[in-house]
Amino acid sequence: MSIWVVLKDLLLFFRDKKSFFTLFFMPIILIAILGAAFGENMKQESEVSINSFRVGVTDQDKSATSKMFLSTLSKNELSDIIDVRVISKDQLEKDLNNREIKVGIIIKPNFEKSLFNHEHVQLNILKGPNSALQEIVLENVVLQFFQNYHMNRILMPLNQGEKVEIVSHQLKKELVNERDIHMNNQPITSFQYYSGGMGVLFLLMTVVFLVGSMIEEKEEEVYKRLVVSKLSNTSYIVGKLLGIVLMSMIQLAVIILFTSFVFKVNWGEPFSVFMIGCSFIVNAAGFGVLIGSFIKREKTFNSVGILGTQVLAALGGSMVPLYLFPQWLINISYFLPNSLALQMFLKSM
Image (tube, rainbow, N blue to C red; front, top):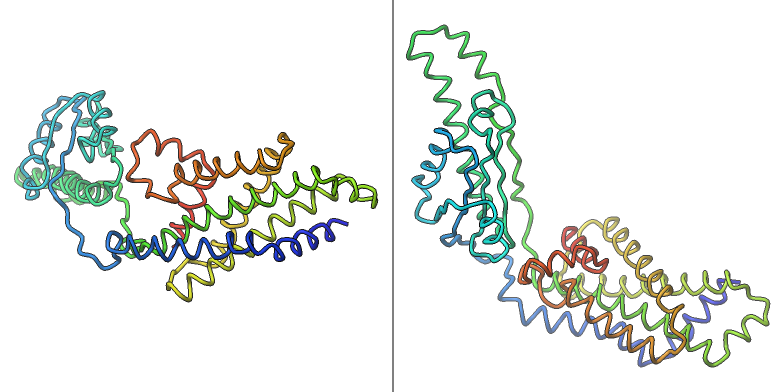
């Protein structure tokens, strides 16, 4: 019986020209406008430059080695772009949140001991929003210090006439735990960003529209006539959920195909995109039906749904990239399903 509910909803939807235009053509129009408007700010082939940036350092070890590290950090070959400030841990976290410093370093109490014993180095690098390039520069400076420190310790016995075997044994020890930095990723274009952003936004709107139609059926007593036809509550709910998921998948497929062929948007691996889309749609559909079960008027639900959709879209980064937000808003976005879906689409791209 559920399949007949799905077919009925699909037929009614495609007959409603207003809804069809809003949910299929509006996202494409907005993607075209926003993608063209912000294209200069997200150019894929634009030259990357690193301006001078401030680094906050908290020295909890206060050893000779930590002071040597601070001196190296201040006087390295990149000192013209790295401004080092020694501050407390509380001030470091505050300045990171206020964006007064780009990157922070906390030198833990056992920093010198861990370096001397070839243990896990007690040093943390904290990055602020939109500081990926600065983090890479700083990591290379830190790695260079670690390697020079160990090489100096290894070469000192040679100057004192000790056996080469001891030096050879020390060379076999792992100097630093290094992290590979993959440089083959391509920057996101404006069309890619807003294809994902508007796609997520209008998927939410589709859920609001279709759940609103469920409430409207109750108001107009269509639901009672369906129940008389021996349609069970379970079959009705399953049919409605399947209809929402199917319609949303069709909408997402249209957005992906159109933007891929017209705007040359590369969405990434098809299976990954499919799984991200399915996960978000099922999540949104279930949440929408849950909220709709507490509201008895279709107009009330539509008003609440449209307002909620706009708020979620704004907080989730569909309209403005998240890195432009203050840190407390970025923290809130981590709990929003539409924000997570958008970020996963962008990672796939």
